[in-house]
Image (cartoon, rainbow over all chains, first blue to last red; front, side, top):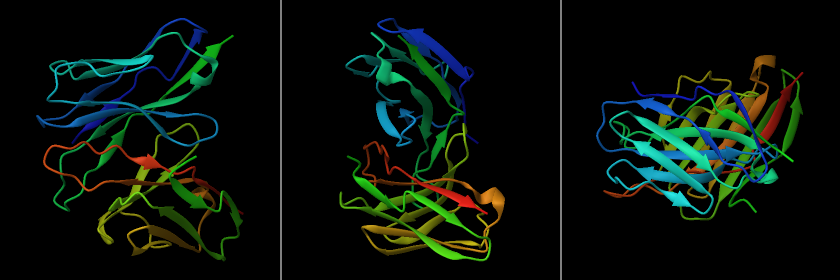
Length: 118
Length: 116
């Protein structure tokens, strides 16, 4: 069974600085997808960034980038130039291959609560 | 603005009440999901509908009854709930997969449910 682990329950960072959130996962699949979602206090889950396992190049999205280490099964999120609006719960998510039901399943990590300090 | 709309945003009900949560999307997505999320915890998958058919039920108690009347709507009917069912209920949708596509989910704002 696949698992997703986020070992940092809480983190804080000063505004304008850089922070890295860690995520590790376990799977026997070779092709899969990984995501980082953000859930601010307003509670809507928002997709931050995604990575296809078959792509070696790390995904970037403006101030957000990932360090994807497939062999180590690691998928960390780096936030550069942190902003107050980045304060939120961050979930790492793994998307499984098609299940026998013909549907993808998503497995979420336990989350990291990030607080950006002024 | 969210592309997945959930109503109501808040719901307080007694254990003997019957109520329904609604979810709507008009993005042409054919997979829709219900999640339950407790405070400071990740979302837990409850149900998945694929092309309006229930494809995954994660052993959810029968007091939760999902329904997908068409490709844009997803309901969750509630009856005889327990206090431990109080949580945020999130709806999400995604495109049905092609051979090499990724499937990010689009989430609604959720319904905050409180059982008295």
